[in-house]
Image (cartoon, rainbow, N blue to C red):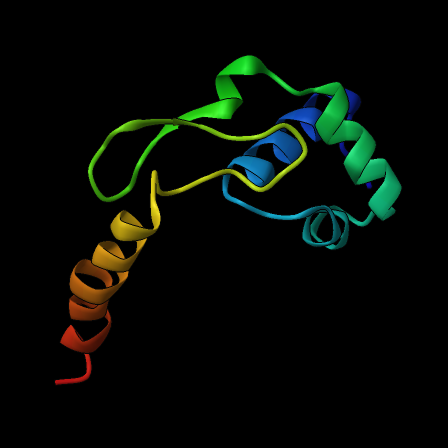
Length: 94
């Protein structure tokens, strides 16, 4: 990979924030899974752990080493999927 160390850290953080796992990051950036995991842990920032629910906007905190949480509860996840996302998905096919 021709990226310097800082650009690599930034790209790893961007992919991680998008919800990519270590394997996907590794394949996207042509590195080993262990290197991707190491880069994620090395560049971990407390701000990355805090986000907002995509359905209700409630502030949520993700767990270190796990995929970033998108929803505060199963109820919000179901509502988002069954109402908002389904309408967007089927809107283009009608």
